[in-house]
Amino acid sequence: MRRLLLATALAAAATAALAQKSAADGIAEYRAMLADGNPADLFEAKGEALWKQKRGPKNASLEQCDLGKGPGVVKGVFVELPRYFADTGKVQDLETRLATCMETLQGFSAAEIAKTPFGRGEQVNLTALATWVAAESRGMRFALPQGHAAEKTAYEIGKRVFFYRAGPMDFSCASCHGEDGKRIRLQELPNLTKNPGDGIGFAAWPAYRVSNGQMWSMQLRLNDCYRQQRFPYPGFGSEPTIALGVFMGVNARGAESIAPSIKR
Image 1 (cartoon, rainbow, N blue to C red):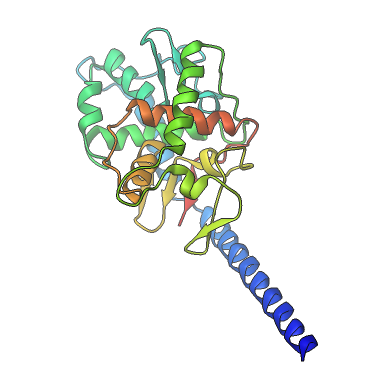
Image 2 (image 1 turned 30 degrees about the vertical axis):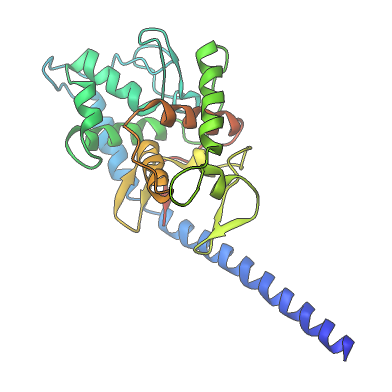
């Protein structure tokens, strides 16, 4: 009887393991099929056109925008952002830096762009620009700088924000992404306290969300994470969101960027 119970238990465990593996494999195959013809390509093309187009009150393009490697240089900048910029005296991610360029070069108001809801007005254009810039670093390895004191401080702030528990559900970022082996809705959750691997976590955004037909930037991804934690929405480009980007980006050092990717 004891042997029968043991055999039954082992069979059940093997079946559960097989089912889990099959679910993960199925999701991976689903993403692979969707990636062939990723709608993010359309946003990427729009972003490249916007970069070269003369717009705004100053009727200028963004071709002299400095994203960290000098005016007009785009390739390789995404995998080194967020970083410190001397002209603003701030650590900025890709989106906030693009907003700065849209203000200084084209005459748009960065503050107004920050207040615009996602999916509307210049936020749509900002997302497209971020998608194209990210695509120009596809296949490159993340190497966020940590040489400036402000970059080191941002990392430490991001780390504290990541583990901070609050809200009605007493959640933190670490509740979902703080250890290995967690899943939700049959989906594996990457451990973002360390390098989760190529094309996972920070290395996969911006991404096209199939479930709602939208292109999501990292700022929007973080905004939705706050929603799921039942926290108040953070302001666009706020210090906590930038700091979280630094924390995750530094932890992803060496990971290959696949952005813009595609998500469920």
